[in-house]
Length: 299
Image (cartoon, rainbow, N blue to C red):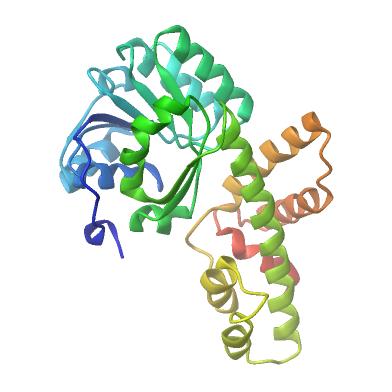
């Protein structure tokens, strides 16, 4: 499946601004355009926004503020806390042009703290802010089957949920502002541990001289199976890592996790260890490789 194959449930057309056209933001915006909404896009690199419009239609704007003019919903997917603050409350941020009642849906993986901060700032302007980080990677975005974890005002969530469904197979409201980001941290803790275990298992099997394709075929039918095993196991065996969710991004996410863990007093010894393993991959020049490249440390 890809963007062109996705079918959409009927939903009232909205005016939507999409801020950020990276590996996740671009396909999500494409799904919104294809599902019948009026989409205006902004990207820091204007040429990327122009290329998106040429490929999918809609229109682009030179600033987030102008992109959000007249929008019912703004969908953001940028790099980090500071990037999000800039496109929301900076001099050319969307908060300055949105009218009361508009909803910002943020798919960036950020701290829970900035989610709460921007939710409060939005509320003071008569706006609503939903922190809605995603899981499923670039492939999930292209196929429109992301998992979306949401925090914020329940009424605002109910308004945007049918819109988010254009690129998701699971959208869940988990509580107040910041709850979505905390749930994404739970997700990343689990993924980090799974990938390290899978890397060790595959490296062990290769050292033992096993046909690891056959091994994966059988163990993926049992208790050891996971999305990572099914979707990344074969490429790990083939030593292919030039795709997917980059190590640099995972380290950013794990940094947020470890910071929040310290704040909460939650012990995360395995996560801290895997974070250091990813630092090893970065030191080997693998910062842009997929997170499954952990196996390279073991060869």
